[in-house]
Amino acid sequence: MKRNKIFANATVMVVFALLSTSTFAQLPVSGAAGDPYPNMPVIAPIGVRIENHIKINESAKGPSIDPSKGYRLQELGKGLYMITDNAIQCMFLVYETGVVLADAPEQLAQYIPKAIAEVTNKPITHFIYSHSHADHVGGAGSLNLGDHTVIIAQEETKRLLVRANDPARPVPTVTFKDNYKLKVGSQTLELSYHGNAHEPGNIFIYAPAQRTLMVIDIIFPGWIPWRRLALAQDVPGYFAQMEEINKMDWDVLVSGHVERSGTHSDVALQIEFMNDLRNTARQALKSTKFTDGLNPDDKENPWAAFDDYIDRVVIKTVNTLTPKWSTKLAGFDVFIWDHCYTIEQSLRLDEH
Ligand SMILES: [Zn+2]
Image 1 (cartoon, rainbow, N blue to C red):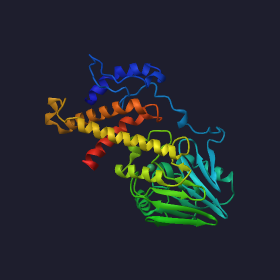
Image 2: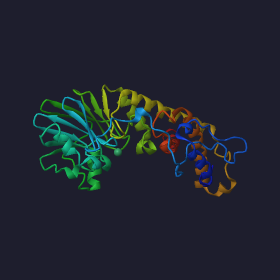
Image 3: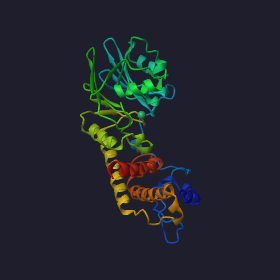
Image 4: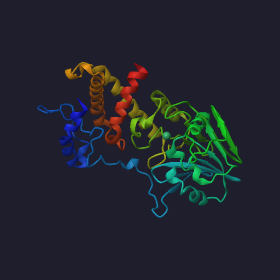
């Protein structure tokens, strides 16, 4: 199917938009006899807006936020806390003479000093970068960290931050390659690097006494990952890191986004979804012939011919996954197309 046909089919999407959200997910895949666009999926393709998205599951929701505060503080045990506005998260650890802060999202920057002041008046002595991305750490520059604050990151993160030359993200003063154990007073954080997945330098931050693991932008508790496999720069690495997170011994996962912290069940469900996505796309690639249904006009235009082929593979993948997953993970209908396009590209280039 050609992209212009998708837009031509907007009338069909308007019909979907008029249906209630509760019936939306139960709709059969279109393709009845006489359908001018057979095999058109029920989920609106990229670029086609619909009035109602599939209803958000209760399991995807987090504890409520006090609107007068704008954030909530979640105690993770023994001086460890998560700060969140139910959209983005960071973490801090209180020890005898100071505070270790891990990440400083720009949208939480105004709340971080207030949240810390709820439990201690000790200063921030250490700042840890989970990775370089501005949405998670772009508030660091506004915290007046001072020259004495130890700023820790994996060495790839330092490289990216030096290149960014951004005053909102100060350059780390301490870097490591594989592992770094931070001992402050009676508290410990174990930092480790497991290779590229989301982006180079993205680390695991483990608090053994609190049985808490912080890994950002890999797992999305209750939700489908952010678009294009959460922008994973290494797709096979992304699959491997989900498994590593699952194997580790922890009770609470601070994963950076969505409304709540995560559990092992959240990780297992995401792995099940991702494996289904990959296997379904593999099958769709195998069962779709490049030349079947190819528009003869595209013979001279390999970009158009490949676009046509990729569309046919992706439509098949979306159609297969929708009945099983559309109501299990919040936001399925928002990003499933992005994921299917991304996995299709990865399978053809990384697996062959
Ligand atoms: Zn990121």
